[in-house]
Length: 448
Image (cartoon, rainbow, N blue to C red; front, side, top):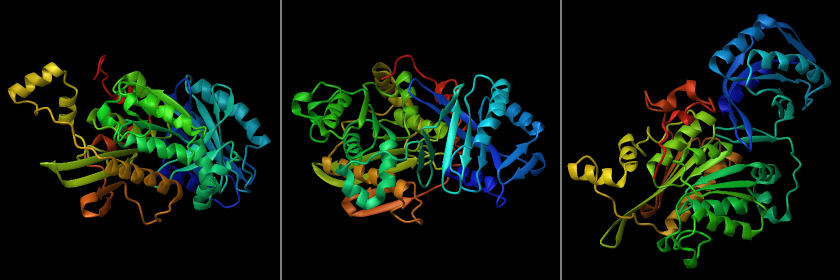
């Protein structure tokens, strides 16, 4: 769930000292072969008059309140999570909770069929969750995402190897455990994506999914980590997997040797907890923008722009933009545009015809790229992730974009509101999860 949603949920559940509180979450859902997720769409308070009683060790809610919430969930095709508090601090489901769920969950499943439903129990410092698939299963991970990324796992005692001792000395065992439970996706495995993959692996991230349909060109070797001259012609994702596996840190590496403009490939990204966008193209960036909104998945998007004249650098800029519901998207910021995406998706023949008729720009020459700048931008992106996990830059650091002017030795940050009328400001789509068509986008049968 989003950070403001968690804050509201805690406010509702702990509004009266010493007695249990409750609320409902209406959720989108994501179901793949690998994972089932519920994504908080809206927090629904329970009116005081709908509590039949509220005590330190139990509460009861009127049937009329349950009917209203199930009616709304069915109309909007959303899942339901019933959340309640344990004010005395017992950080797990009680025997009484087990008994109440035996009555509540069949009611939810009957009223709102064909959806995954669940329950949450919160104390002041902990959370536990269960999903009904349709039978009860413990939630593996509960994530809160926003200015900070917080995680609660059903396996909090994962062993930390001595290899990570220096990191643990820096930010503690809890953060290392969170890293070990994270599933992070990387879209684009070139000059920025390959060092991002390298650093995430060495940080101890539990699972990486690598997305890139390109093969290595000999001109890529000077900036793609883990590559060799002899690797030319092989898929970049396969080269990076081979390299990361050889490190021996037991990070699970999944590879997808297709571009995310392929719908089946793009659908796999929703399994990730965090995504790094390291592609040069605008259509994949627009897909990631929609992903962040529909699934509450933080997307950290990177870009490097080198300007050069007659073999002399005139400017070097790196950019790291964090996308999440509530933050300005790449369209709002002018980083991508509908016109550029239109031109980018033209066939080669259509592009030549439109260039001839003046409706499309001339084909660009390959952009300059230097490993020092792509690697530094990748490191800045990893620092953004670590800040959201640890807060090491301070509470006042709330920016969602970092701009690196390498030629000026300057770093600037900013945070702007979504532009009026932009889809990213439409709360009704936040956390909707799986919809048809996927991400509310039109998918071509064949894409470049």
